Image (tube, rainbow, N blue to C red; front, side, top):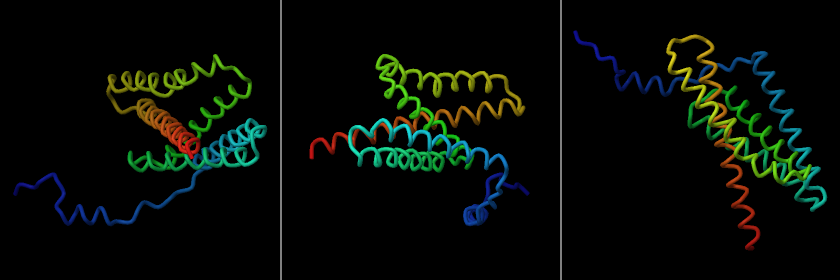
Length: 180
């Protein structure tokens, strides 16, 4: 008998309708959650402080909208890539940290450093992880260090995509509100 390695239609349907895995709450999950909440809080406070002089409603709305945009975009990217909860939380943490540094540069009025910040973000979250990924994949094998490099590079690449998508959304909102 020749058995096909591909699942039959009924097996595929049963696999798709099976309930999701049970969520296990671990110490690692709690640590990433605390780190994520700390960066979200820091970003919100710094944005609020920076925008307090312009208008009160903007000082409240901008940090809330930034957190919502980063979180929703992270959920979308993790869902599309079929990532884990840890990857999503770490992606939100990295995005908020990048925005926090940007707000800090704006607050310090370091315009020249701000000009180069986007390129530095690209180098740290795209170029470097792709280079490390190339060396990790090239060596072969299945050691834990290689798996960690691949996992981390996926998170960093998704974090940069998240920042770019959020910035595009903010730009569109500014354009729409200026014309109205």
